[in-house]
Length: 493
Picture: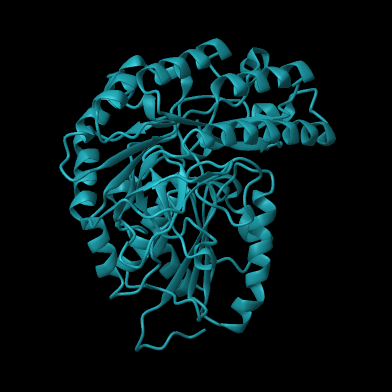
């Protein structure tokens, strides 16, 4: 593919994994556009394809190399096309990627996203692959240009990296130790998002409630939530993910007492067995975890609590699994990310004895899903007849075109499909009454009770004059196996 001098080079970013990766992809897009690239239209082959990878799941490697294989003939048919691989899998595999897929032009890591445009140009000039993996953060990603995917909701990183040593997790070795942003920088970015039209912000970190460790303030995260409450025009604040070991009562108070902080909490459990939690190096036990849940519900009875759970960790017995089911029943999660344990090379758990047979893991996983679905359905049924506030979204309802509904998220994070009309734009706020509950969503098929046109809706409408992908899902957990197309998921906790 020889790009005519009369047009700029085009790009496409393919994102896998969690919200941290999705936010990094906004930085990648911003960098490329700052360098003169434009996002490709659906009908054409891009000049540059960037894979922003995840290394958490067992099939991450197979998925990447399979996709690279599919692109090989496309690249051969289009001289000048470039392929770049970044993210956690690039940080892990480094030069192995160009050995297995020598048609890849650039490999860059989690610490040097900002180098991508230079690496692409160098690869073109030198006609050879460029592999650059830094072992520590070059610049904090939030200082880089950004192409936001949504006009009404945005992510803001408060920290990168993680100081925990969970035995199943490879992320700390790929993202590094925790680095905290200064509160003033975070709040300035939040204000800039709001000034651009956003109504909702999600604060991101591998472990948000250890925020402040670098500058010695154990209560910094609660203070940050309260400070977000003072930003005019910011209507919803979310965060992901906290770690139970660092969860302090002041954060619960900040959530309950700050009007724009949503009563939704994603708090990873991973296992309900104390023995398994110890083997995972999770520095809390089931009593501590359930105690936090009780405090949250006492302060915010309407709180929707979501979680992460791993089934089949090495050494997990049937009794351990039953402990997990017991905690699930006690916690009454509204939804969950669920995972079958898989070996990740480079983690301590990979070499542990007593790896659980696949058939046993599958059986336990199926039983966990059945239990979670029963609970989430019961919890959702409690909302039938209640009026909820919904932030109208785009991309949340896969059947909206067939059903004639619109979709969005309630303040507690639940997905709501409602009987709207063309006057209701993504970013607008509606109030509607729930008429039906399913395990993974709510329906509101009666008339909309109120519709408020917002700055966010205005921003979305203005954006349509210059077509671009019209937003991203707000991306909260669901129960069951991951969908075929990766959606942003909770950060590690």
